[in-house]
Image (tube, rainbow, N blue to C red; front, side):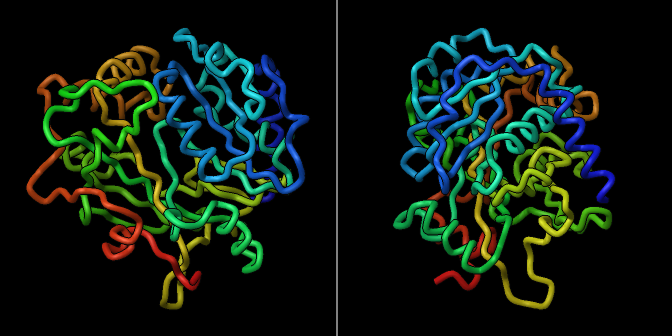
Length: 328
């Protein structure tokens, strides 16, 4: 595993040659700042609310990798003092689906910083997020000597056809997509890396109904006190060193955990699925986007009579999808 981690680090350094720095505000990063790293492609419509949300949460600096967007995303980010941007036309697939680029930026800029690694359609929530900034969480994690914090990806969707209500730039996507599956999840343990593997939700129920074992993984570790010798292996599903993946309790009880509210299923999703299917830049020959494209032809509704309407983090804790653990 040590050798595997070193190879990941070396791979990230090599793939960094594909990145061109187009907006450098990294000199604004101060000791103790909370950072956010994300990779985008044609996500301009989502950026206003994304930035607003994470700024209000307490993120101090954003590191963006723009993978050849042509929708004006870079122009939108231009001049924002808390944003640094790298551009690449490199292959997302050959960069381990963006992981190599992210590992490089984390190694260069995030050593010693608590860092969030999320997609532009993911919104991090944690215990007491309605009353406490993210620094309260990271301070508690530091005191408890915890280096990584897990969150399950929770797919949100509208009631009715996905494309029935158009999403507007700057809008909170939860105004449209605020329903979720509360209980159809499976959990197993990855013997090699020690992380939990979670599947289920509407993507397994609708898009992978006949092959649920191929449904996307919902387990993520999006918040890490980064060290330059760490490396993500597959998205934010698992890290090396392997101990960072042990974000769950093995002797009874619960460790604190959060949720990533996943707002993929807006009216923008159909066009996005078609674009990504044609690019063939995603995992396993884009099997996920193949399933999306085929199923979307029938204009399915993800809502069902067992769907729950999202209220707040306390609701998700009651349902057993996240936990405050011993953080009081």
